[in-house]
Length: 133
Image (cartoon, rainbow, N blue to C red; front, side):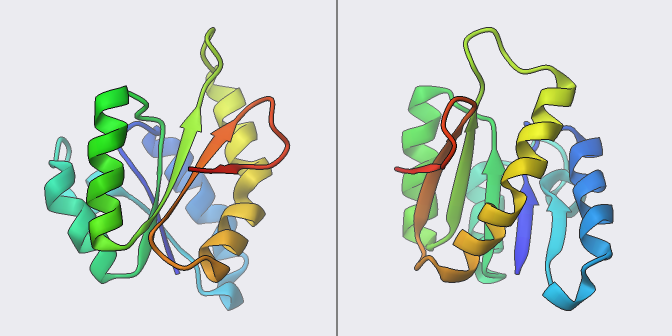
């Protein structure tokens, strides 16, 4: 299983989760920051099909409404999973982002393992469970 953090997440968050996941090698989960594999500023149309070919899922904080629809359609056509992290109106601090990712990590891995692709989930601070799109 490959879990990708897009460029909207800090490189440090992706590297941190990669390090945490290394202690669980038996789970066979690879964590990747999109710019490491595809370069900074790579177009969604470039990296999403490549992630699909590797059976990956994407975590993003890109909630620009017209981009959500376009990105979701691209992911749907390429049959990948997508997790949208939606911050509260006041935004998330760096530490709160880490808290949300770590708290949701097991659920992300479980959904990735069992959900038929394409799928999408919205991750919101107030909700205990992620809601499907």
